[in-house]
Length: 448
Image (cartoon, rainbow, N blue to C red; front, side, top):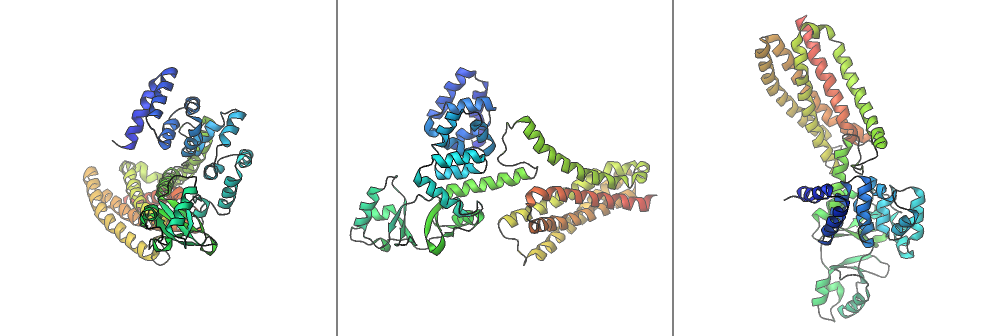
């Protein structure tokens, strides 16, 4: 049973229950060991009033962790419903990582209040993190890691580890007096080693590291190819500032996927399922307006050939086929390009090769499907001319769809725009306009 099925089985009985039964059922679910992420997913499935009530019924210790796992808009819906006292108690439980996660979606006055309530240690960690851009891994690094001097003995290391007020570590980082990274040691190796063994003799080889100014994509890639589920992150002069782990990589990948998925419709991965009606209307309305402009452009193109459409009704019947074939062909190329650009596989050196390759695929598919569709259309309307006209339009549209599928994301990237956000709209407009123009333009020449 997959995660989504599990969540639906948790959410459905809660939605059906009355208020008293709902709270009792909710407590049972949480007591059975529901993790913070699952709790957040369940809460996001409820209207705001019920969401706040269920969140308040959680233990105080879990409040911040659950809110951190929630999408920004859903988190704000709960924070906005809290009294001033409740809000302060919640903010007081924030650590530096949670505040970093929340900061972009919080009003400045709440961020300032949260910073005022942070302990001195957490505030120092937060200040170090915001020295880096939020697109750099140094901004998100976990700074609370186990470190030991690399030149000491195992006996001394065991004494120092006993003084840590944390759980037993799996990995220990070795540093020198200036906090420069010198290696990684497994805690289990320290425990098994003889007391006189030096730590530097236990360090593991081939440890992948990241520069704090590297991108989040670099961090995900580094963890994927690392021999260990953690990757040390180094600041200036190779000083260890912390690490990122596989959980961070998975979370980042999920957020990036959701961002691209939602961006295609003008939404944000942090949007709430139960967003306020007026706010949701305004945000979606802007995107609908943009799509209206592109639809008008396609309609104007069709309007140029009104005479031929009225005389040959078959053309109106066949136009959606032209648009659909060009749209799907272009979308395939666009998706491939966006993935390649996200993985940094598309460079100035291979763009022309990619274009030639996609034009080849588009042209061959264009020939094959133009023959098939042209033949079917000719038989359907008993007209060789109609069959040839739509065949030519399909061929032109699929070839140009491949061309624009490659060039549009490259151009948008140069303009510092997200290809996933605007690419599909521009591509659809281009394939519609060119497809209709090729189809109706050819028809006007040979049929009138």
